[in-house]
Length: 202
Image (cartoon, rainbow, N blue to C red; front, top):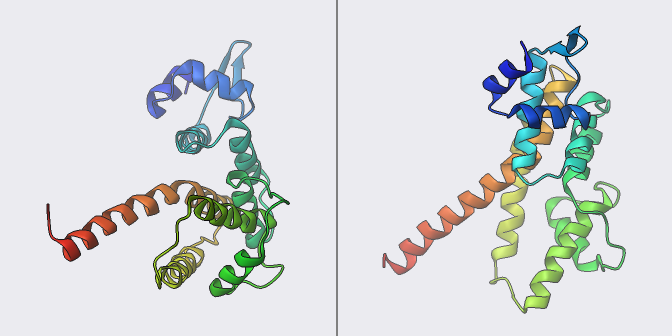
């Protein structure tokens, strides 16, 4: 298909597709003439991944990292998860104290060496935000968070496809990026349902 047909099929404007081509986010099409190229299903799928990432707030540089994982998937599925998280997790902040973080994540089954430093620092950063705001979690809430997060993680990791590296990369990367907004939205719905059940409707 021509670039105009690729645009029509994916809903991505032609200038945006050309930008992704220049940035090497999208592989070049097969040249049929010096100024024309043919595109296929691979380009349709890749454009959908790019748009999903960018519309979720992932930067061009982070999107490139994710696509690198798609193009050169690590052999070990655990390394694949790390590559996905590295693209969307802020870098480690060595000024943060991880003492309380380690105590908390031990409740998820964490042991030293099991996680990238960046994800632990992300937890520490969130805890620091709570502390700075003077906000204390209600008694009993944190154990529920840990139990729920572990159950979610177990279900998600059990669902990682094994038929191909491409399928595994797509599942892990897009699941990491795109599911988090769904989790937050479901949490808000659940809070409102629980609030009505406790306090009654306004």
